[in-house]
Amino acid sequence: MSQGGIEKSAALLLALGEEATAAIFRYLSPLEVSRLGSAMREMEVLPRERVRAILRDYAAEAAEQTGFAADTGRFLDEALRLALSPERARAMLQRLGAPAAQALEKLAWREPAEIAGLLEAQPPQLIAVVMAQLPRDVAAAVLDLLPGATRADALQSLAHSDAPSSDMLGELGDWLASLEAVAPSQGEAAVASLLGQMSEGSAAAALSQLDRNDAELAARLRVRHLAFDDLARLPEDGRKTFLRNIGARTLLHALKGSDGRVLDALTAVMSPTAAQRMRDELDTLGALPVTAIQAAQEDAGATLRRLAAEGAIPFPEEETA
Image (cartoon, rainbow, N blue to C red; front, side):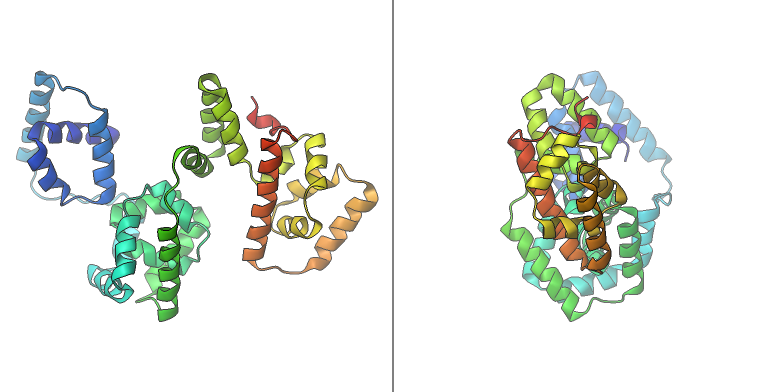
């Protein structure tokens, strides 16, 4: 639904009253309720003529309807519908058990960006099981926010699997239990998480606007937003400071999973001998588990954020504009 349609529907619900709105909400998904509720909160007193106009529009549209229209233009939504029948979804939910089913119901009420952030590092099979249990519009919104390769792998897994194995159900249960132990992020942590889900250009624009409104907040968010790959944009002094504060093993493991820009940026501030030694050690390191690479990059990113928060290194030049 477009933003205009959401606002129009919110206005109609306000005009219908609390009991009618509550009855309608029972038939909506968590995402729809969230969007309508947000729009309703933002509305103040509605002019009487505005209410009359909305009711006239709805009456006219209802008179012209000859059936229910499906949103066939939405690929991800349609892919989910084809991949999993309602019967398979119900059977899978029964196999999950009551605690996991309740956790999935709570998950559906989180923002799609937050769900996508929680799922991004999970295996495609687990993502597929979660997508099968979420309301279709929520699942489609989450898939829209996942990286393209992750999204494709999850849809493929969903389409070719009749039912998850007992091991996968156990893994899903463990993952859901871990979510129950951690409260959803709030305040600055939530904003930093959302910035991480936005495109680089949009995040930079948002931080630039915050600079004018609350420079201190923008500075703290930039610290939270820094990641391992930002090393490639640090000035020379900042890269040298980072190298003095990071363990050699952690750095090698983190570099194993990054593109050449970070390696080039770091070796550029090292002596030729040290730079060549690092490249040789990377060549002989061999394959590493993805989890080991991710852990090393997160540790290196945490070191970078700590140094930035302490003022030991400046922010990347592209983010100070």
